[in-house]
Length: 138
Image (cartoon, rainbow, N blue to C red; front, top):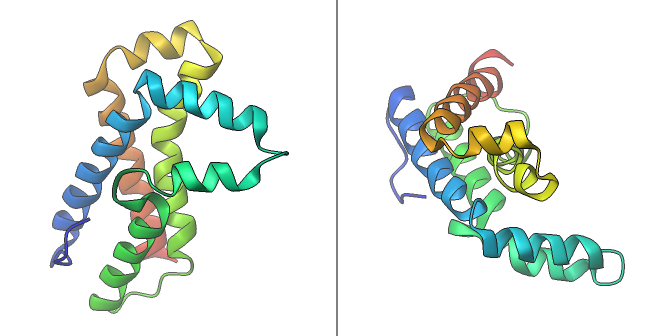
């Protein structure tokens, strides 16, 4: 995430969309999918492993995005209930469109995954809806 907080809603959207694109590229990597598969199988026995791996994802994942969103809301004097939950939902859009599709090998989802511009356009639209709801409508 950039050090400077966006000054407009459009700049916020563009910054978050850029971040989600980085996350998209990260999560559709086959090595990440294989690591995720391994971690899920061992989560009960070694719960700390999951955090070690996914807390170190691009720009420290959910926590960093959450802080960025809270800083924006504070700067714009917006009342946002839970920045961490918003950040989680934004990243879950990406995870659902990438890692989950690759894990379950759903042919329809995999076909869409082969068209990154199609997937990112849908993620971007959904991200704007979520940000509008949390930042401007609650």
